[in-house]
Length: 518
Image 1: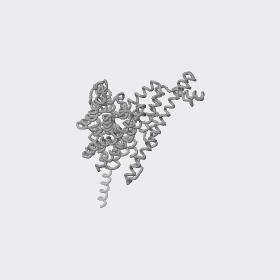
Image 2: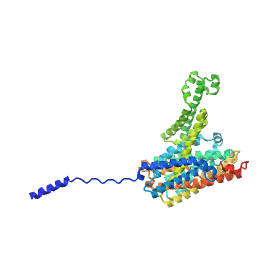
Image 3: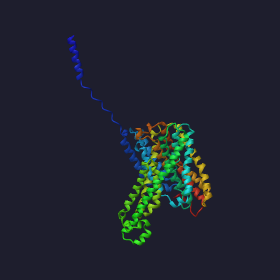
């Protein structure tokens, strides 16, 4: 017994002394599973496609009667998406296109340059001359489109009320760029100003409306009655619209005042005639005190380069202030650009005027082309189609097409007839049809809003669309497919259609080939 116990104890010690087996090496992750490498591959292809668009696009689009800048960029994006798809199918890598952009990047990086330049480049004389009809189209038209699209989406009985309202706000944002590329402002000044003005106000209003919906559902209970939800949404919409515009006006006027004092101080510093200067170059309240006039000598050191940076920083400041206060930074940027172009721009040096205009135009164009390319590439990413109900996708696409057209018909013709009553310049039936058609197109803003509103982000623990909920994935897939269809198919029809309408409705000593080449 004693030996047996000793033997057992010895065996136990021996077992305890046996070293543990070494851990098995973890399998190496394939190259395509590295998010950083996926982003680098995607960004490389994106940059190459952007270079292709900017180098070839201006040569191709004027020489064909079918392609616009947006449709060409989207086709280039489809080619890039096909390349990525072939890499995923025939290679071991699985490069996720959707991992390359955060959903907030569309809203905070790509949208601001587009909206700011729309305000900065607006033709102020035509805008204020037709402000009433443009506001009716841009503001009231957005609300009508939102209501019609939301109600139509609800008839599917597939999506929640919140999702239907968000879809209505997203799809209320129009894209009239394709029509504006064909319209000649000298031949049709009223039509061009209405289409352009409606587009910019509509984009800003849709963004404010979507933000109001998000804020409403964060502040009220889930069981709130639908009438109370709609009341909260529209109350928040008008409050946000007004306060965001007020911030934009204040920042814009502040920049104009500083640049005005800079121009006065620069002329004073160069030894200009004081009497002539006090009458023409500066307001009376500045020239009352000679010491006050000399006190702004610091502003005279702001050269053209610094003026461009000054405009950029003040515009960004307006955006940050509005976002910090829980308002719409996009709406603030639009109003800031409008005020800056009307007042601040004329107090800049000539070199600063040209640089500022070209810089913001380049940033806006770069953002738009980037979104169009992304739409084409992301449409062919397989992860966007693995977690969707394909029947619901096609049903939603068809319903959105019909509801968008219905919304345009509901309010465009009544507003045009009202415009013909109080305005000497009349809109013809062909002009009304052009306004209807311009408002049926969807583009960059709708894509940015649907990604911002429905795509998964870091706060949800993932950015992979395959891990998003089924409802959000279905909405993203439907909006992406609809935008691709409208950009390519309807955009191709727009160019020859508007050229034919221009030639037939306003005969002037100019050939149709000359119009179509613009």
